[in-house]
Image: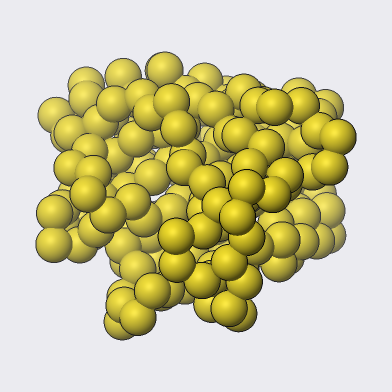
Length: 188
């Protein structure tokens, strides 16, 4: 059995809940050939990635999948690209508010997912749930962790992916969890 580290973000921006936590906590302990190790991470630039990398290394995981909330979206969207860009319209949970800073100085402008994002999105829609590929993880902490993980785990033997989920007022957490389960089930 392989180990998948799956992360969800704490609430941020004055919200009491985060749809990513609500969905991830509803996932079973095992999906297909994967044992899920769940971790709640802070909505803090750099810190979210540092905690995730530390746990991934300690557990010697086979893959890392991060889940984040994207208000305004009405589908579960696996992300194809992470940009080497930090830009915050609102401060993170420690008050950081970068404006057009690189995630990794001297890093590539963009990094592509090392998980089968298109296959994952297709599995979500095949399960009768709203899903689609997204081409932008934004520029906030979700993009920051995604880029940092892709940069750190350059070896494709540890695939990295990111999925944005709609806010709870758009999609029920049970439905979101079912979409995530469908996406994970297609991983090798």
